[in-house]
Image (cartoon, rainbow, N blue to C red):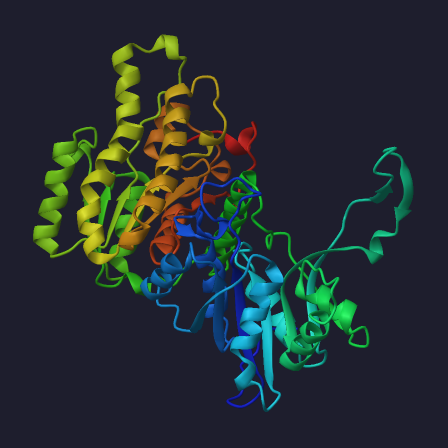
Length: 487
């Protein structure tokens, strides 16, 4: 089933975002739905998926007293125009579902209302999953999302800790959301359930299965990335899934991204006199951007915070605004730490990390005015410290953390912060450090530049984009080997 264009008439699809949990079991410092992922609250990502899906007509959020003010402010700030209700739920999950069901009771008289219940802490639900649920509701009155189980499923005695049975995993699924229902079905299921003094449930499909056994519940396939934020470590996994999704979206645009959106934007590039920075300047200019670039050869050393600040001020005065700031400047000292003097080690760190801090600090006022974009560059060597790369690898790891921290800090100002992490590229820095290498082993600087400009043309924030040799963007393994050799 694929996403379709809905006709003007037909069933009304309401997405109910369940966000009333307090996160006590997970031991987060605040409710899980308000924890930051990629610089935005987790619930914002979930809301965005339903806001941008053409088959969803309306959104209702059910939350708690602690979160309601912040969620209402989020809805206003990010212009989630489909949100029609922000409701208060109860201590139990089913009470939140009931709050939404009752809110729509007067609007369900003609029988064409359908509701999709989704956990706010499943931030990466895809348009494909939503479409599968909506499409299935054309044929079934209740629909669940579930993921097939790839591993052997074992039943064990909880006391003796011995196996009692091996389950045929073809019959086992891991439940996800959204769960979709014809309104009349979910309302009737809860009406029956509330008459049961022993009523207890964990999800809405469970209510239908138990109290309306005559009603078939169809199962559509889920996705691994549609995972639920439960524990602190889950944020790290979700972050990697989000990077992978964002990378696929950029890669799907093809080798020559549509960069018309750069027209008339003012882009300031530090390190723009050679290598990837120079390629970005050339390509952006060809697509109508107003580009200013600088480097040591033009008298701007990013280790000098005052020089960076002066140059950006001059750029603003000359162009009237600054829409994006890019830093591609770096140095690579490929030698043992003890072969470097302390001065040389400090200079390496000052260029590769302190320079990025200088640029970020001076850029913020201009980017806040335009709700612009800061782009930093890492290296594939950031994932694992290697011999002869000590200051370089450590600095690039720091740049990655700086990116994620600033994406969070600056989200309320609308400033986007991303990082590009290219595999080995044929740049002057690389040639100086490694000499002549087979061309087919290296990325062309233009290829990296195209991808980086495509990211600048988007709305993501807090993402570390890996650019690999085949021209795609993806996640690189955190391991040793040629694919993760820095440069």
